[in-house]
Amino acid sequence: KAGVTQTPRYLIKTRGQQVTLSCSPISGHRSVSWYQQTPGQGLQFLFEYFSETQRNKGNFPGRFSGRQFSNSRSEMNVSTLELGDSALYLCASRRDSQAFFGQGTRLTVV
Amino acid sequence: AQSVAQPEDQVNVAEGNPLTVKCTYSVSGNPYLFWYVQYPNRGLQFLLKYITGDNLVKGSYGFEAEFNKSQTSFHLKKPSALVSDSALYFCAVRDSNSGYALNFGKGTSLLVTP
Image (cartoon, rainbow over all chains, first blue to last red; front, side, top):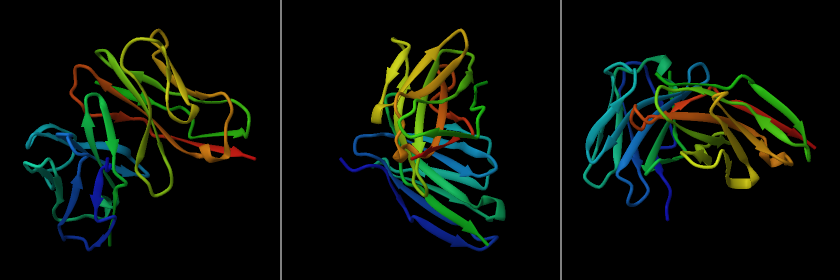
């Protein structure tokens, strides 16, 4: 069974631009969560989607948004990028109590 | 509110020796506890979880963890460390009252020397 797939693996964007990251969960998993990992703040929860509905949201500004499609694939969008948005963005799909993580998208904002 | 503390930024151990990576937690409801490992430039790999039941949980790659409710701890252990165990280890907690978001500790870097 294929794992969680995140695309692209690496991105370089300029301040002020916007970016969209994609996540394909494990087949059959209907829950997708997003996390931001930075050296300073560690791993922080962004949001969770289940059956196309946002169920939970972390403490991030409105520039961070997401959505989930009927096939459970999810995208997250960051608008008006700031230097501090440089991070590894991790997606996880969940079945029951266990979360399975993708390899992440490394976003660098210059 | 829920939180996790990993008091050690780095743990050094010689290959073949036992290892312990510490984790304490705070939740308002029943804790769901997890350990993940991260290798450089990779995502998180699941090691083990405690939901309910036996306090000693066995996981992947020979790792185990002991849930101690009175000390609110969930330390990760392995009887004999391997050089390939060198990685970043994260403890995470989910509160049964707070949805499915995981709250992670800051991570502990484990270095196993030959």
